[in-house]
Image (cartoon, rainbow, N blue to C red):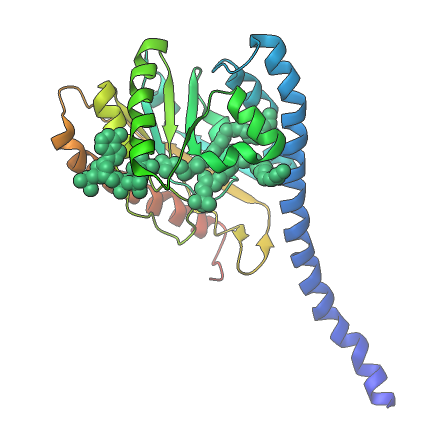
Length: 271
Ligand SMILES: CCCCCC/C=C\CCCCCCCCCC(=O)SCCNC(=O)CCNC(=O)[C@H](O)C(C)(C)COP(=O)(O)OP(=O)(O)OC[C@H]1O[C@@H](n2cnc3c(N)ncnc32)[C@H](O)[C@@H]1OP(=O)(O)O
Ligand SMILES: CCCCCCCC/C=C\CCCCCCCC(=O)OC[C@@H](O)COP(=O)(O)O
């Protein structure tokens, strides 16, 4: 009995360590969602006051409101290739998609008059849904290909008429498998239909600070690499597959390169 009393406090040590990282994981996730909901609540009246309703200019307000959130979560952003975004007129940005944390990187580099394409379910996310609508986010129904395609073709026209840039996640869903998923074609049809360039953007792997399975959410660095534009002038729908393949290749090699260099600078990581 005595021996058990001596041992049990020692057993508490690993238990406390386990709960503290797990606790931090849930706490940071909860805080992130709650804080974004709160920021959206502030941004809604600001957007309505500025532009009276749904308007792409509201993305400036959203960008401004989200920029500090990285500090609250202990994340650092390292951006390279910013000069590639200095193009006149509309273009399509494509990037990999790991988590809702991508919004932080997106707001770090979002050019003016740029909004994004998102699944329609996001509109039901309370204040976040409303601010997305006010920011002109284009919602698509992924379960109905024909609907999604027609929304994307309309978007190609609007891009040119209103001089708008669109950010698309060509993987079509979130993915943290340490590699890119095969690309869907929508972003490439969009760029070809509008005859505008594609600018690939790559987020480094989050696996060195965020591991969902292991319930870890530490401080860390996100590298954001903006790659040179890929022209689509003169291309037709016949070129879409090769355009998608080419984009995939350049993004995949950039992803492996920047993710690897972070893993090395942080020392070995557990997987
Ligand atoms: C102030 C504080 C606020 C705080 C809150 C923050 C608020 C705001 C910040 C904003 C940030 C919000 C961030 C939101 C991120 C959300 C991201 C997402 O939701 S990702 C999911 C949605 N996005 C996508 O899915 C885009 C990528 N998907 C596609 O491009 C798909 O192709 C599609 C959805 C258009 C269609 O998909 P699917 O039904 O699966 O069909 P496919 O297999 O891809 O295609 C079938 C065939 O159709 C051809 N195709 C596709 N598109 C077209 C087209 N536009 N025109 C003609 N043809 C098309 C395609 O080539 C296929 O044919 P094939 O013969 O096989 O080639
Ligand atoms: C009252 C409802 C409350 C719902 C609360 C959810 C609110 C989310 C709040 C804060 C996060 C802010 C950033 C939101 C934008 C990110 C959205 C996102 O990343 O969507 C996932 C989508 O790309 C792919 O979806 P799937 O991986 O296919 O699934």
